[in-house]
Length: 452
Image (tube, rainbow, N blue to C red; front, top):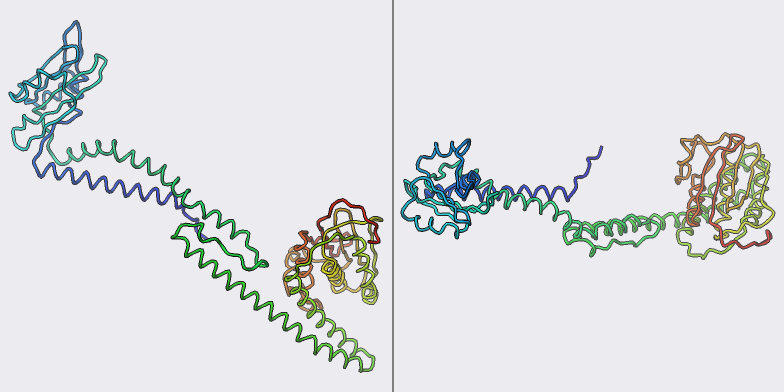
């Protein structure tokens, strides 16, 4: 059972995101270490903003609500100091403001966000200025005396700050940009895949366009092209062997036929001639397959009724000698198709010969031509099991090993029909035998006499 392939887009997006997170964590760790290494202390921004949000202005005076979390901050940080001022001149302060910052407190409403770190106790000079938008307007806060120390807390604060401002946006951009970039970069892969899907082994020499894919995928495309070349060479070698073998068989077959003609009439001579005819038929079918593969004849309008009637007349003696009856039904006007007369005649002949070989030596072989470029050949033999019907078109496949067939005739018919753009179906005949139905493309609606 094959494993489900993973998406390159998802893999790259996830792995790049993980890499960015690892780099970000390493950066945060390095910043945390730098703070600890220099014994630097700083004021937590969230504490300064909590102070700003705890301030209200009522009746022209600024007040600090000291309940809840604000009371916990004041109780836990006895050395904390801060000053608050809005842009209308309302002020309040808490704690002992260091002398160094008293001049800044006087100009607090003009200050923007800033901070000062200290490296030695008692850290009162660690300071931060924040500006917060509140329902009472823009509030400026300067706070100190409550420095943040400790590796865990510093790491957490830095992680929150960089994670929300850098990490999260970077991951989101990666997850959006990577699929788009991969889609743009891999646009040529879809083109090459379409080329590969259209490759037909009967049209050799096809190659994939390696310049359409990224440089990293070009070795794969070139390797595929080399495999196509080797495969084509193998098929060419096979075709040459089959043609050479068929040609080489012609001479000894002709010699054997001449010698058999000199034998006295009898059962042995008849059986030998029958076996020789099978051998000759195999050679001719091999040559037919090769000629079909090299065929460049332009199709022309043909009357299917006339073509099938002529072939039926030619093989009628064989049908009657084998113990069958032959019947044909066709319209009284021409059924025009586009095709090659010689190859289509061979296809009809092979289907009738197949019925002769497999219908049991009795009953009716029925040939019918219908509108729409359709002809059917059916018999009253044992038929073909449904599970075997697709296999009978395989080269050298025989339903029964003792069969007198060669296993090439139906394959040749399928190839001829396919090259004409038609299709062939095998179903059960009304009498229980086999029925081969062939549909061929029709030409322009031109009415021709049936004697074309």
